[in-house]
Length: 453
Ligand SMILES: [Zn+2]
Image: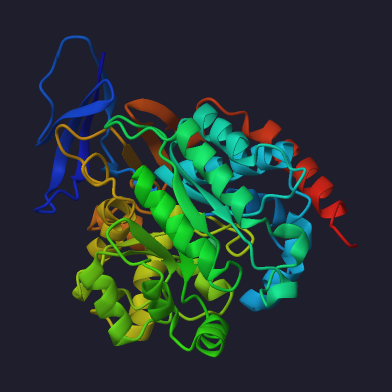
């Protein structure tokens, strides 16, 4: 059975950045068969037509950094710096269990889908001793919603008693971390071209993990052929921590541990000097830019212009909802453009450059750009169809500007692997009212369970 999205504007984000004022996309099963100018031929056999007039089709968005569980802890420590915010939240997160992660992940994944996301990573790094199978719980949530998923098995092994930031209750032993990470890869990672589920390895950050864990995690990831991720250069506090403890910048420290390469991407990358950017570019290391989270925590803003000029792959991330209560991927596109220009002037990031970060840029960051990130014949059918003819956008000269600079448009259709996940701006397989009730209850339970309170 084929699906024909017909009569819409199309921003393909292919190699030539081809756009059609009126075009169509034909999806055959899991893959895109045709992307072309003009209306589709009438009467294609075994086909369902979707009227796309008044809409803009883009590739489904790719989210390159998140902590899904944080959906349950929105609105806490709302005026704090990163380190103070973390210190407040670690004891709350110490109460996580499978039920909490399942509900929190579902809430966060629904918000992603509703804001144009078809592929998301997750960075889960809090594993309380009696928490159960937390990675399994979020994988189940992603499968039931139907998003393409790249969960990373995160970790922390540098507790406060050894000079780290997190309290000892939320860190694990290095051997247990490596064993659990190996098991997660063996159990869940699917490297096939049609994969809906790949697994990565992601120790948390320089101030919450040991150098030993970073080195051994990199060795494990490379042995298994999976990707590597961590937070890096998010705040000046972290920069100072690295210089004081290791005598080097965050990038130099990670480089010394074998952590630069085309299989690595870092979240944030706010505080890079020119030398750091050159090292990222020459090694093929990618960056997950999280504009709303960085602004929410007053961390500064990523040097997207310099990174892109140097050839570094840059994608967008909403980051965990505890530091970005909106967790809306379409809003990150707008913020990436506005914040880049606020700092670097009107040429710092174009409207189409912002869309590129959310689509093919993010796909490159996740090492998945051979299959997703653009609307092209042969690629997986991950597509967002945005309605740009309502009162908020009607008459706007440029549909891409409507999406990037305007208020977030209704999402007419979201396809993942050719399957409809969102239709008429609502989830097709999720009872969103029921979900709100479940999230409210799970948040109250988790906050009431705060360790040490
Ligand atoms: Zn993060």
